Length: 125
Image 1 (cartoon, rainbow, N blue to C red):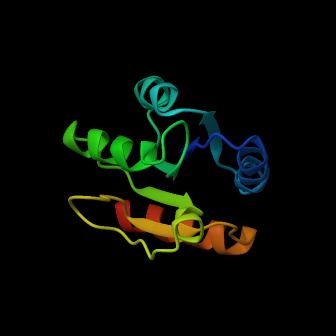
Image 2: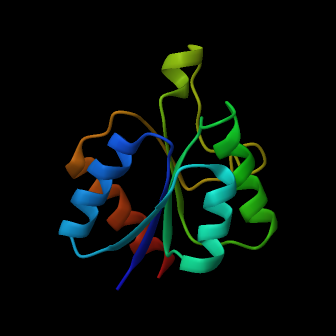
């Protein structure tokens, strides 16, 4: 079974994503902070990660993505964030600053989320 880790401090986002992902047959785990997320990566071994950008600190997700890539984590990372709306700037993936496979502004429609997850997983096979 494909494993997806959701790292987000908003329980509503986690619960909604979990509901749709589990309905599609994915095994889902979650973490509410960068430190908890780093630990879950080691314990759970996700095939894909959904990562919030702003948690305890405004750049927690960005820092976590860089840490993971520097440690050799190669599974797809999809960043879900409302940082663009909060800061009034456009953000996108960047190999050095934001090393994720996909950057999506919240809120995201369930079908769009599932389609993007499927596409990222098919690329990583």
